[in-house]
Length: 130
Image (cartoon, rainbow, N blue to C red):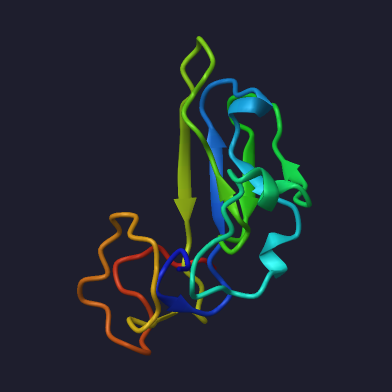
């Protein structure tokens, strides 16, 4: 599956730290994964040591106000907080002009509503990136 049932490239995301975050608890990325072919059958299980052996993971220490901007096709994820302090972050996504709703695509249900969206049309109810 993919992140959202859309076609197009203009779908930037931001992860904004609101509290200090150490790299071990930060949103992690697989370097170069935004260039991987889209796998309709599923994601690579990077929790499996055999799959993760060749992967280079990226994560950073972050101060409040630091942000990571990324393409959602970049393989990313974050485990539960293992620090004694709270980890608070805010995620933002924008929708560009080339994004079109494609209900035929299998996707990960993140609880985002696509009600009112029509196949082949721009998404409705989402902020536009200028």
